[in-house]
Image (cartoon, rainbow, N blue to C red; front, side):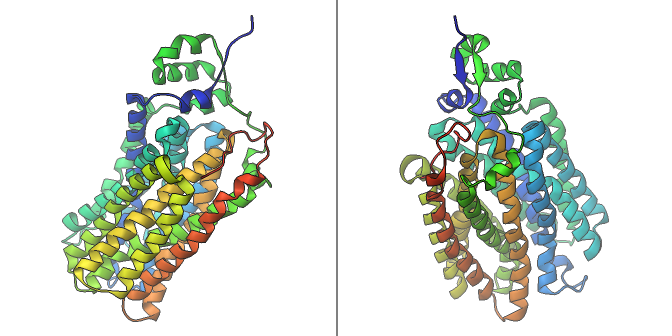
Length: 451
């Protein structure tokens, strides 16, 4: 009698939503919370070091961009590591690196040169957390709720941005900005805790011939089928090829890959341009020190709403690609409102809507990427996309500062972000055509059309 076979992707996709899923969402959200917090706290340092360190606006923007240099490297490299040694050890290492270097930034980042060097090293760890967390949670979640719950896990990044705003306004009034980085050291503590509670990806375990551990995890997700998993042969849809890291640029995936990279570049240009400069520009518009920082919290807080609303609409109505196109369009309109009006009401509405649609749209793009590639290249694909996209993130604060030096007033930065979001409408539209080139052979069975 032949042995029964269970397809892991199908078993996970058809599973009912259980407390185990919520535990994983919370674990990923906590990791991405530290990512968002530590990535964005330099925005709240600009106000205190701009004059003492004799910085131009472009140099001040580089205080934020410097961390994204390491972030880009971490994003590019971690995917290949995670696809080889596992999601769990790679994510834990990212937390440890980010936490340790965050503390060192508070201790030793006392000049422009030392600060940006330590921030670049911190970014090596931060660059792991969001792309890997997104890819990881997408591997576990049931099909019918994947976009919503993946957005909730990745939404920890935005909550981290809110925490950065709250601590920025409440703990730095006396100029003690170093405390922000000491708090970022909590990422290392979280990494130690995850050594005991963070499970490996089931698909990764099966793909790398560790069926016993995979069987136990599947039994927690679907206890009604635990006995079946004990005797069944578990399989994933494809075995990891020796050169899986090249798969993302093969003809079958190239169009979608390039569209993902371009969309990430444009959206992250807007995300970090807005995140770095909104608090300071609102202070320049006369909103006051504390109120300016509150605008940073509004920007990040509304992005959680945008991610969840976009995920719901993608799951129930339009699909993730069309939802993302609408989010980019509305994001462009929101920043136009901020650029060409200046009242407290329009600033609040425009900044909140920009967070909802532009930063929230980035979470939708992460879900598109995670659904694009098969399991043996998923971490690599997400890392490549966000690694390339971080170039846009690096340029957003820096070019934003350069434009502010070049032009008077605050409108130019918001106009530049609006233009980037508008172009992103076109690049995300290309994602819908990529599936036409995908072969139907077993070599790439996980690549499904993105609606």
